[in-house]
Image (tube, rainbow, N blue to C red; front, side, top):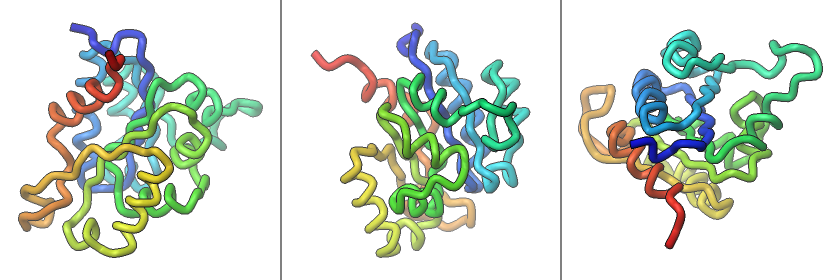
Amino acid sequence: MAVLSGKTIVLGVSGSVAAYKAAEIARRLIEAGAQVTAVLTAGAQRFITPLTFTAITGRPALTDAFSLPEGAMPHLELAKGATAVLVAPASANILARLSGGQADDLLTSICLVTRAPVFLAPAMHEPMWTNPATRRNVETLKGFGHRFLGPETGALASGDQGLGRLLETGTLVEELVRALAPQR
């Protein structure tokens, strides 16, 4: 069932060990009928390549606004055309940059200019998630109207157990679908 048919999702991928899971999120969004454009931060590219997302989505994955043809303004075009922006995984770094209003790369520029709902799916080690600075950033972002999907408690990349794990991909996509469903 194509519950996201006609929806355009900008999938932001930030630098986190969980970045590999974003490929599965992209696949599930496509299966649900969405048109997906992946935007990777420099940190994300240390964990997964843009080619992976291009192959899955059938659309070029974007990494740098300044490497595009002169006159192209992808942050504006993507922001205007998006039904939603989903940042998954959302690292502590991206949360801090977004809460401070930084627009220092393509993903943060899109998040700053879009009028579409922004969904953030955190993934980080528990001490980072519970750090007072991160908690402040989360509250600031919620105040901006951004919505959080997760995190959940479970096995972390370090082998520890704790709060900070990216939601399971199926759950994450289900929550996004539910949030984008027309309210009756």
